[in-house]
Amino acid sequence: MAELPRLKPSPIPVIRPIPEYAATGALADTYARTKQGLGVPWMGVVAMAFADYPTFYDTLWSAMEPMVKSQVFQQSCKDLRTCAEENANAFSPPSLLNHLAELGYNNCEIDEIRSCNEVFSAGNMPYILMASLARLLLEDHNWNGPTHLTVDPASAAALPKPTLIESHHADPTITALYQDIRSALGLPFVNTDYRAFARWPSYFARAWDDMRQVVMSDAYEGHVAFVHKKAVGIACGLPNLTGLDPVSLQKAAAQDASLEEVLAVVRLFQWLLPGLATNVAFLRAQLLPA
Image (cartoon, rainbow, N blue to C red; front, side, top):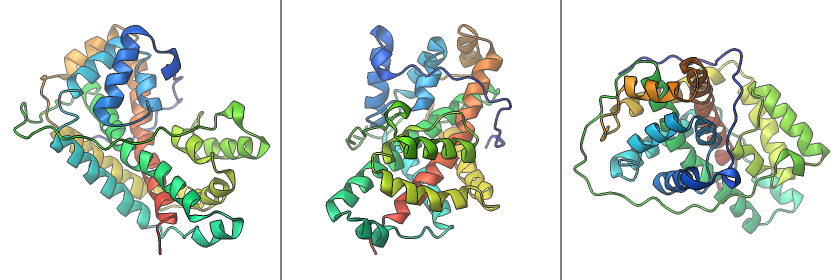
């Protein structure tokens, strides 16, 4: 298995994600194929940032697309999710159910939050593998997975598209919360997941208070590093049905920008996504029925 150390680029590169509403023509088609292939209802910031480098993203996605609906890929995502949840559970997430009941949340509303969490608990996994594959190839690691599939394609479960509270929607309370998230995570943006959970401000403020203590703890990085290592190991073994090699992806990236620029963006997301998956798993555990 390739060794790929955890690496947060410094300085953090500027990202220019192309939002779904701005995607037209061939890019809109690629976005639709990405969501359909990964079985997700939203374009992750990682994919929209990669799409700012169109030759690079088209080359990467064209190599992934033939295998993402396979049982092999979907089982890989499930295995990675299990790893994230096991590492989140190591922090013994406190239940929020009594707190939410005291605030007046009913069971239907709590189930809505759980459903929102499920979108990201399941949907983040293919994006982590996408970022891991991209970094492996850009850093000259061969993608040595099987070159054919012997199993029938699997169908991904349909997930609802979450409602996002963007920064320009936020009241002062959520604005301050977003600033605290950016500060604690060391990022210049707020991931889609958190903007979706902010749909329920009184829930998310309390959930973040608990999670922030975990994020700032000495033990946090070790558990996230375990998820990172699992993702890299899985990515290395995924089927490489088109034979994509490092040189081909590097040449594609160089048509859009300097290789160093593209690699910095890839490293940023490949660094942050294992932590995001662990955090979402922590939030999920807070809402598990007794």
